[in-house]
Image (cartoon, rainbow, N blue to C red; front, side, top):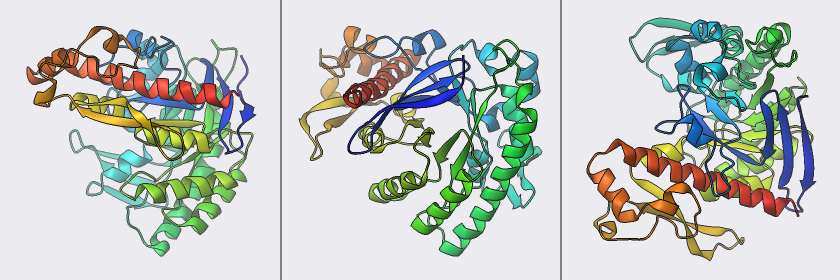
Length: 381
């Protein structure tokens, strides 16, 4: 199977219906990718991931976290066991992040230099160093279909000067990431089994909340001619309208014939909005994190100003659901809504039963995947 991206149709407002072909399968876009931080989507078994949603088609592609898998159980162990797909019994496409955002979040435990980032583990305080080359080596050992260039994230808010300075590192590190990837990409654990096919490397556009810096970042990364491009450093505390503006403007400068990925977003109405703007790929921990805290999503009765379905957020812990025989969402065809009542789910959560986290996460993930399926059908014309 070849690796490539094909735009099947573009809507007047910019939304794209496409197909991304990867060694472990084809991904229909726009797509939402569940996050499997430590080679697991929290509380949800792999066989359930494969059957999520009203259609039962499941998640097409998921994420794994480079930083966390590097620390535990270790990338060399995973390489020895055949790569992360075999390690976690997942034979569909997978993407790994670079570890840059996780290192960024360790503000009191890291030191950034032009060579890379020196940091201490949040697990045991042990000292480690991530360079672009090391991030690539770890991701190659993990063996995901798509890997991300090592970048630096800036805090929000950050001054223009601070953001500009950070971009110099991001672009230098992207070049070093690309050079290492091109030299070593045939070392992927499953490469021979898949006919010599290799991972794809995506660059990450940074630039904070400054349009001119976003443009500069996009143009420099596009010159590197990478297989795909992500928009990073968003949904970190800025107003939603600013997030939307940064995405819209950055899309103008990214190639139309390559996949475009917005990292770490968002609520269901946000991912629908961004997909209709022309974003091909998105991920977020929110569906499972919200589920573990009793927050679930359902379709509202009305429509927003731009014609999108309204989204209702329900706190299943509320007393009002104690005698509610209805499902979370009467319009949802997921396995949870077909079988369980709000009253029972509230009981599980209130009782501290682990099953509550699984069922609420399954519903939320299904809701996200069904949202993207609906958008794909609309964009198919």
